[in-house]
Length: 227
Image (cartoon, rainbow, N blue to C red; front, side, top):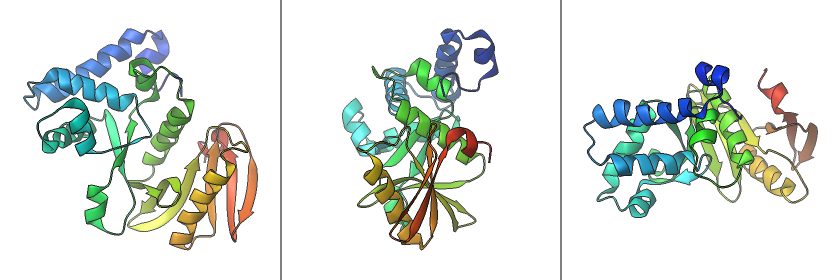
């Protein structure tokens, strides 16, 4: 979660390696390839996104923040970042494809080391980086990943061949202040799909909860990532 997975950085632990990699992707793989002239806006947008992993973003909101002329331009930039394997964007689940396209998507980075080195955030953001780590694990298995958000929220809903497969909630550390919120979001998702069990991944806690006829298995990340 701290150093990511790029071999050169793991060996050398020199931040310049991931600084240069981040810039190389933006300049060589995106700006040059797609003939983008406003490189400064592209860089600012990319740093904003990598500083806000785990948060929902929309083309219209980003257009206003960065004062870009058209939402379509922002969406093109996001698409380029995804095709270059710098960032990934997870849609909100909906049975309506039209709503899926219109709703905000959550942003995740391809590597947590890139987040640590290039983020402009002034806080550690362990919860969101932990969520990013679990997403990277899920994308190794699933091509269809969504987040669920209605009254409550469930971080990941994974499908295989169009069929529901599992619901995963991610919480760095469960405590009395967040327990009800985390469980209720998961239960709401399970009820929608008529599923009896869900998984809540934490950094080190292990437990089990039953509520509204649903079973929530709380497991530490080191166990979940080895499954």
